[in-house]
Image (cartoon, rainbow, N blue to C red):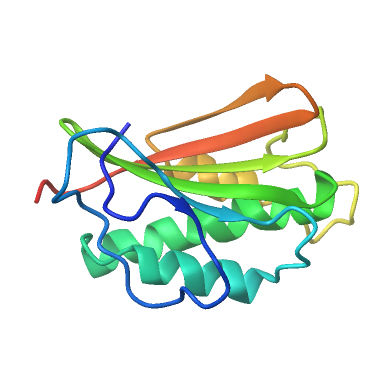
Amino acid sequence: MGVVAKAGVWQREDLRRMDFTSQLDDVPKPLALDLDGQGRSLATIRRWTRNALSAVTEDEAEDILLLVNELASNAFDHGRSPRRLRLSRSMEPCFVRVEIDDASPDPPTLGTSRLGGNRGRGMMLVNRLAKDWGVTHGPGGKTVWAEITCEPL
């Protein structure tokens, strides 16, 4: 995983722009937004993510925001709400990893939705944008992750 400057869990008052690269050490510490029981909205999640993306290009930021939005939407719709969002960056090769934890054991599926015919395209977008994505199962749920390539700093 990558290195980040401000590790730990986001607090409501901490919506300022965050530096995504480390000046302090080389220990990978993802930025994390705790969503469990907080009733966070997609707008709050997008705003927090945008603030975390100071060291990527505008095009990369837009792609990362789309990944975050789709993974978080999927967790809200199918995963009994998201619990935590993590962002991390690897420098060589350069990529950003997005992780969303939720309480459902069910993996996401491509192109199908139990919510209606106009739905079910989020994971197809993730599949198209991400260099790789997957699911890690753990106690109490799963983590859906996606990685997107970036330009080296």
